[in-house]
Length: 254
Image 1 (cartoon, helix red, strand yellow):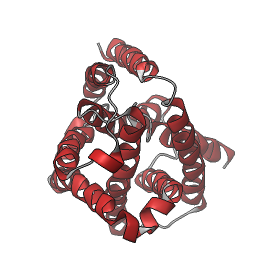
Image 2 (cartoon, rainbow, N blue to C red):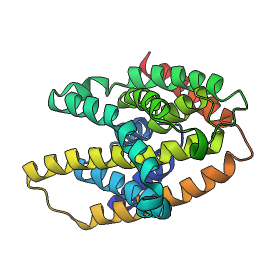
Image 3 (cartoon, helix red, strand yellow):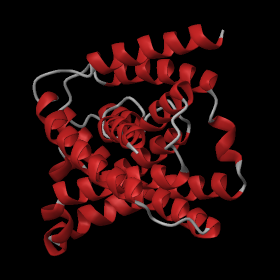
Image 4 (spheres, one colour):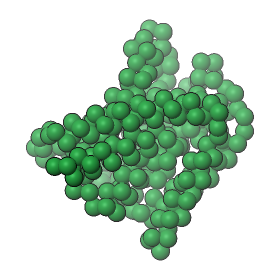
C-alpha cells in the first residue's frame, strides 16, 4: 500500500509540475512509468492526474471563468481556439493513431526540436496583451499550434506559449493563454479516458482519489509560481532542460 501511495505521489508531482510548464507532461509520465515500471500507473490514474490539474486551473482562474458576463468574448475565443486540438485529437483517438506517437525516439526528437523553437520565439520583447490584442485570428493560429501537442514531447503549454510569443504577446499573457486553453484540452482528454474506464467497468479507488488531490495541489502551486517566475526571467531554463533531456533519451535509445 505504501509503495502505491509513493508512486501516486511521484506521478502527481510530475503531472502537476509538467502540465503547465513548457516541458511536456505526457512525455514525463511515459518516461517515468516505463523506466521505473510503476505498478500504480493505469488509465484510471492517468485520468485522475489530469482531473486534478483541470480542477486546479479552474480554481485558479475561477473569477475569469465564472464571471461570464464580463468575460464572455474572452471565454468564447478560448473555446474556439481549443476546437482544432479537440477535433484532431478525437480523430486520432477513434482511429487509434494516437498510440503511434508514444515512442521514446519521437519524444526525444520533439523535446529537442520544439525547445529550440521556444527559444527563438521567446527572444524578442513583445508586449501585446490579452485584453487589447487577442482576436479570433490570433486564437485560431494559436489553436493550430496546439495541435502539435498531440505528439508527446512537444508540450501543450510549450507550443501554445511559442505560438503566442511568435504572435507578439508578452510572456505572462502567453502563459495565461496556455493555462486557459488547457481547460478544454484537459476536459476532452478526461472525457475520452472516462469513456474507456466505463467500458472496462473500472471502479474509482482510493489511489485515484489521492491522485486527484495530489495533482490538484502541485498543479495549483506550479501555475502560481510559474507566473511569478516569467515576470522576471526568460524561458531559457526550460529550453536547456528540454535539450538535455532529449539528448539523454537519444543516448538511451541509440
